[in-house]
Image 1: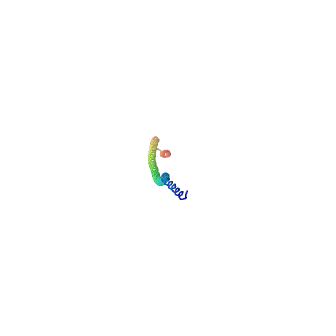
Image 2: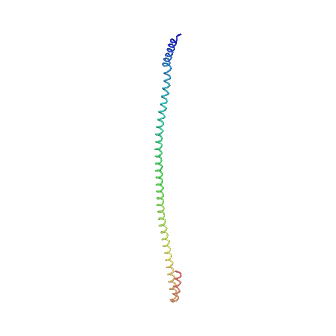
Image 3: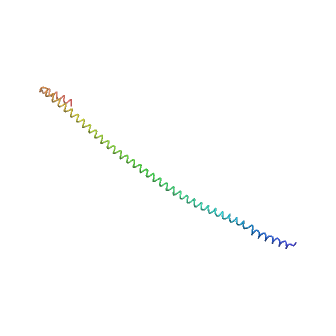
Length: 156
């Protein structure tokens, strides 16, 4: 055989091989590569969406934490106000109770003082009546009268 005929035959076989490969082998390979490229693009897009979602979630968490902190500080402030109000109410009640107790004690003391005065008046009146009775029963004697008045003074 001739080199030229072999070369032409080899070129024809190569061209047929290339045509066969382009027709039957290459399209599935391209299809698989395109699918892989699409899958990689989808993965990158999903990663970007995940990154954005994560940033939004972090922002929402920060907002929720800030809101929670403000609510907690508001609750603490309200609790402190309520505690101060309770203490103030207790002080007011205690001072009112103390004033009532003091007024009652003063009234009791005054009542006891009045009873003591009445008892003392009664005793003085009894002593005066006894003294007058003693003077009137005894004879009229100045030294005797002086002794009786001295005794009355001691009894008073």
